[in-house]
Image 1: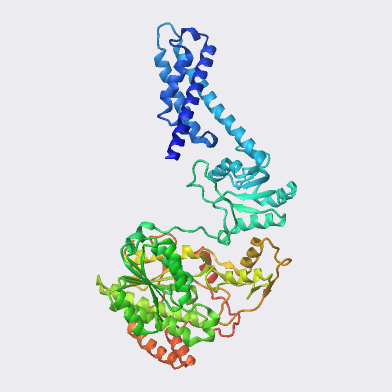
Image 2: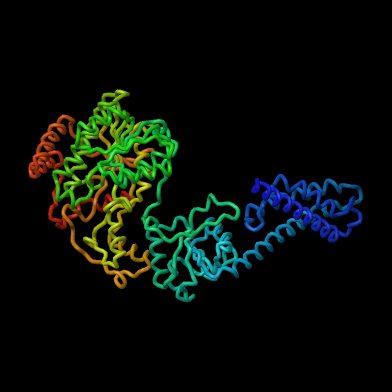
Length: 640
């Protein structure tokens, strides 16, 4: 109620001020035309009445003077033209030079109204600018930069100039009343010439300034000790809402634009369904749980063998989705009897299988455990899901399954092959009730448990050094929220919730969804960026030490095989690969023998069986540097 009264009071005040200014404009127009006395009712009354009527269709009384922009001044012009027409009709009497008065009145009204608004903005910005001690250099000159320039005085910032992208924006020119200081490549010299220190700040107002472009800005500003801040999305802000600037985040430095999933397609797949997530306590599983909960499932079954991570996810859901019916299940996916009881009790309709052992060196040291979890566990979950009428099972896979050099990689490739074979058989049979198996493959996610980024953060907290295995090592990176969003998107595409004919045809041939990860990032560059983001200098404040490849590691990972041609799908950010498939009976026979070997602890026999299924498996147990596969450079170029 108080907000409504305040808004009504503001509109009433604007109406009074604008109509008074309209009367003043009419008096000026009558004086300029020389027939003030000849106007019926007097010029001020006519001007006030004309603007009072014309202002409502164009909503000029609802304008916030302090934030009036280009569109507001266009509306103001339209209202003044309509007011001039109304006054012209009221003064259309014989013997009067009414047309001249009407035109002069319209121009005078616009000049007075726009002039007062502009003067008020200038006064407010000057007043706030004097209070703001920190001077700002803005990188960018688009609409987002314009919005920031409007809000800057109210954020305690004083904008000193612009550093735009376009070559036509040369130093010496002015944009939006501010000087152009130079190009982005000149930022180091600009800051040095200004004597930039803690009283200055660089604000990146261009939302497309990401990846290497943002890294370059960060490096140049860091050399002069100038902090860099990024502008958040201002599209939802109105009026006097504040938009806090945020420091450059590691995700901002990824060489790719994030892709938003189709929320409507995801809702149609998840709403009102019983959903099971295995590995719900892990990084990917927990984010799957959070995003699925937003789409209104009927029930959410969280399965993990770790008590503490499962409790953490439950606490998170209690705060974000308290009304959601959920079940916490402590279970080992390698225990077929336990998994059978879970499916019999909860009867899930969708299964997201994220449970896996993912740490390459750890699985190298315990190969039988890794194969049992990633291969046998996946088969146990898939078979139970198929027996209990699950609509679809989604396997979360990894780029390490392509040309695998580690036990973890080959175990995930075998899991892919089993799910591919199940799905291909179901699709060829054409049964509407047959379970769909959707496999989604992607690279590293930022901040996942045990990944390189938390390791670097821990090493930075101790003062360094940061350890990088090899200066040539590259990996694909994506934020965990975007990766999980695209996993759900692939699930909708693969299950028919979002129909795509090409994807359906490729899935019948054993297709695997591959997330568009952009271009791979050098781990050495990532380490340097994290040092800079911490406000330190690589090589001076914090050292970087090279340790050599660990068991099972490669210099570079692939998202698909070199002989494959990635096919587009109907969903942005998703493509599809069609790796080699095998007959389901053949996979089952070898997997039976592999499970027996693993339970007996015979890792040599288990790895021999893995090679029978994945002949491209070239094991690298000692962390030796191997030749980068031929064609990888071309593959990466195509992927970008």
